[in-house]
Image (cartoon, rainbow, N blue to C red; front, side, top):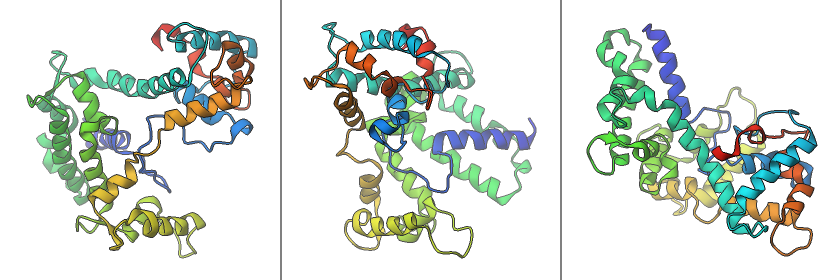
Amino acid sequence: MDVSVYLWVLSLYTCLVYGKPTNRKERVHHEPELSRQHHEDNQSYQYDHEAFLGKEEATTFDQLTPEESKDRLGKIVDRIDSNGNEYITMDELKAWIKRVQKRYVYENVAKVWSDYDLNKDNKISWEEYKHATYGYYLANPEEFEDATDQFSFKKMLPRDERRFKAADLNGDLAAERDEFTAFLHPEEFDHMRDIVVLETLEDIDKNGDGHVDEDEYIADMFAQEDTGPEPDWVRTERDQFSDFRDLNKDGKMDLEEVRHWILPQDYDHAQAEARHLVYESDTDKDQMLTKEEILENWNMFVGSQATNYGEDLTKNHDEL
């Protein structure tokens, strides 16, 4: 494999697993694929239909007529009504949203499984993963003369091994499906959260002192491209750091303060979205939704010509 191609593939993998850099990086781990679109109640339904259908499934635009969308939304409603009493409770809607949020994680693992399970024993050993991801580098280290490339490989390999071992609950260095899912998506598993916090701190801590100071915190989110004034949101984030991130007021964040920041425990996003959907659609205010109430407000759940109708509405719903 040409080394430039290999580096491109590895960099793509890194972006997928560790996050794509942006001008304002979001480090806080919300529920998976719950849209971070600004919530504007009835003025925009992008947030709602992505939360209800899943981001990838809410990608088609103007594919269906309103009549087709309502018909297929009705089939989804029947699946959400787990006890078949023709009422959708807050808990049923919350459970559906969480199911949609989790689905992309397992779909992602299914897509890449065969790339790593080289001996087709339905397990992925550390050696298989290392060979598939780092094999070319390990076999041809002389081709990686650039100091940046060398540093990236040398840093990522032991980091991946540490994460793999944390995901490998039985310690056999061979990941079954759930273990490999925990490896690729550690933020979704309670037993992996220490790794998520540690990796985040290591990513941001540029001076290697084991803490995140204010400048490192800001630099992780914002790259100053000129000598002009900082945007207002950067000044706000500086205030956030001193007021809410640096809990012990020593001018820096330690591991526990990073954990408090990126893994908030006091807010359930699926619960909040379910509550919002019920509030906006519950015309008789009985804290439950009928199919009729949902269909009456169909554009909130599945999108409209101003947003998307949702790819889920064109799928066989047995797979949802």
